[in-house]
Length: 297
Image (cartoon, rainbow, N blue to C red; front, side):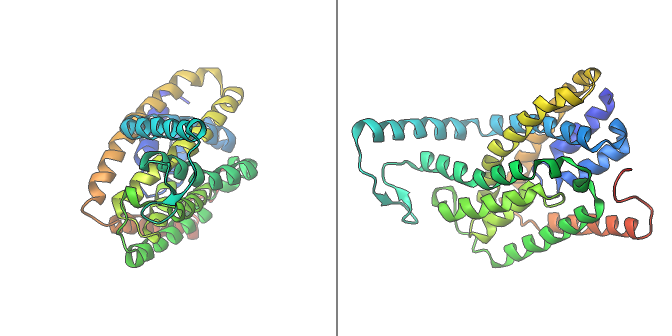
């Protein structure tokens, strides 16, 4: 992998990680077009996961104020619980927030709870995720269509009334399990979690913001795990291009976050739904007529 290939992969990673159009589908095509590592699925997966650290940095920088507030409130509230012997009572907008927790520290617990499904599924399915089956374009295209249709239903039936201060256990569980869908190629982590948020009655911007916060443990764990293994399977000469591509992914990812939040304040997700359907249909057509192979041999 040279620097130009890494930059192209980084741009695609940054653009598609947070926009609900399926990063896996676009990354598979980007990897094929650039020809990195001759289509080796394990090396390609390692590159994708490591470059996610760039998009992780983008989330942390963009939401640094929120993360700092959540972290400090989480430590403070639990310190007070332990040393001031406060009794645990339940209160809050949905009747499920312990009274000793502020909104910020409660949000911290929701992020932890919402991260459990993808953490468990990721560990159980790790070898399958890294294998060639997750690069199969038939499956990717079908999942792109399935999530697009579910997102359309969520747009129609969701009440879209909840803001960040209204989030509760239901939101964390629903979006957490929807995030686990992202382990299936073509689903899109952001698309699945935003869909889950809409089904749970959240406003579009709220669903996107919680989706981004949920991405921090998921992307961090995946990227750091693959970083360790990547050093073992990737050639040493790939280090500089990999760093360059990761930096590019972070810059583009930051701009993508800004764009999506601004867009969803005034618009629906229909444009992304249509895009997913068009791209998936095009992929299925190319596969049907034998113009592309479903997997790289």
